[in-house]
Structure formats: structure tokens, C-alpha cells
Amino acid sequence: MSVQDEIRRLTAADIQARKGGEPIVCLTSYHAHTARIVDQHCDIILVGDSLGMVMHGLETTVPVTLDMMILQGHAVMRGSRRALVTVDMPFGSYEASKEQAFMSAARVLKETGCGAIKMEGGVRVAETVRFLVERGVPVMGHIGLTPQSINTIGSFRAQGRDESDWARIEDDAKAVAEAGAFSVVIEAVAEPLARKISESIRVPTIGIGASVACDGQVLVLEDMLGLSPRVPKFVKRYTTLGPSIGEAVAAFAAEVRGRAFPGAEHVYPMKAKKP
Image (cartoon, rainbow, N blue to C red):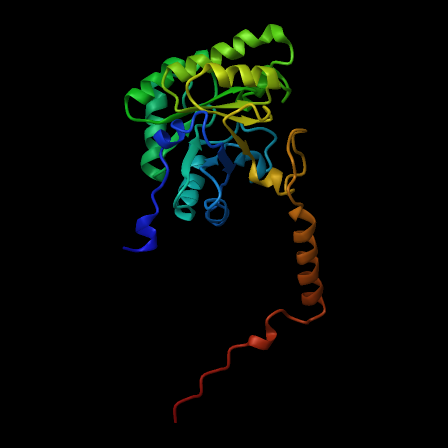
């Protein structure tokens, strides 16, 4: 049996079973090569619609299309072997109806081979979550700050800082969990509320700017590597690759302009002509 045969990819059921257990590690990835690197350390690789901002320089995630998500989801699946790959459903791909959501999710699962999809929203999408789960689509929920709603909420501000807002966010978490989501992302929510939600729902919570009270944590890879020009206040930069890349590019450019061409010593010799 090969090493590849011995590696079993994690499933939504595996993640759901981690409630209250070993913390769940999740990072985003949009490419085969970064997926290959993070796969050995992560339980979930999220192909987030944040790729619109990280890869394409968009101001929000709203313009991201289903085709964009499928393309990058396929790349991440090729680069990973162990982690559960979860692909974001972009804005406009699931809101119109339960049937629209199923057709979009089916495309994602069939064309990428991923193991789950993620949807933003709470009470308003709970019926759709139930519809998808009943038809074999594993769904990760996403409540709190929901970036696809930026045009209505106005800014990427933290949620639940005022206790009067807690009930609404709690209801959202309970609605998607009870509808069958295998886990719920809680984004940019005050620590006491994140803790209360984590203790009250039966599925794992995965925090992003929601404190250590959650069952796991997720970050945008480029944010924590110091490649994103702007990051939320809660992001810890574990390294700063941006300056290192800039220095390497500058060194390459200097060599080329000085005609000290990289790799010149490895020029391939011409084949000798046959007599």
C-alpha cells in the first residue's frame, strides 16, 4: 500500500465530531502550491471568497463569481490530500431560492471534488441549509460579520459589542446549527458572545476575530503571512513575506539589468551534428 493510499481526507462528519475536543485548525488557500503547504497542518482548508480581495484586488467579496470559486477550489483539491476542503458560495449563488442554492452547491462539489461548502447568513438561510443537507451537501455556516452583506451593513465592523445585539446573532447561530450545518464560522464577534454561542450549539464554532472561546480558528493565509496590505485588527502576522519577496525581485531585476543573467552558467550545450 502506498503512502498516498494510507492518507484519508477528513470529512464534515470528522469535523463535527471535534466539538469540545482538539481545536480545529483552518486556513484559507486559493492555489495548489499553498494548499500543499498548509495541508499537513490544517484540518480544514477554506477556499474563501476573500480570493476576490486577496488575488484580484477587489474592494469587497461581492463581485466574486461561482466560476471563480470553482476554478480555485479545483486547484486547492489538486494540491491537498488530507484536509477537508470547503468552498465558499459567493454572493448571488444561493440567495434566490433553495433550488438555486442546490444547483450552485452541486456544481461546486462535482466540479472541484471538495467535501463541503460554506454559506453566510443565519435565520434567513436556515431553510436553505436544511434543504442542502437533506440532499447530501455538507454545509458550514457563517454568522456575525458577514462580508457579502457589506453593502447593507456599511463597514467591516465587529458585531455584538452591544449586548442588545446578542439575541439576533445567537438566533442566527442556533438556526444554522439546528438546520444541519456541521460547523459555524463566527466572525468579528465580542468574546463573551462567542463563548456563549460556542457553549450553546451542538456543532463546532470556528472563530475569526472571535477569541479563543471557539472550537477552532481560521485566518486568511495572506493576512497572517504579511502579504495583504490591509488586515483586520485581530489578525496576528506570523511573518512578513512581502518585504522578502520585494528584496528577491529587486535582486533579480538588478542582475538582469547588469547582464549577470541568472542561471547563465547552466546554458544547455548544443547537440553535436551527426557526421
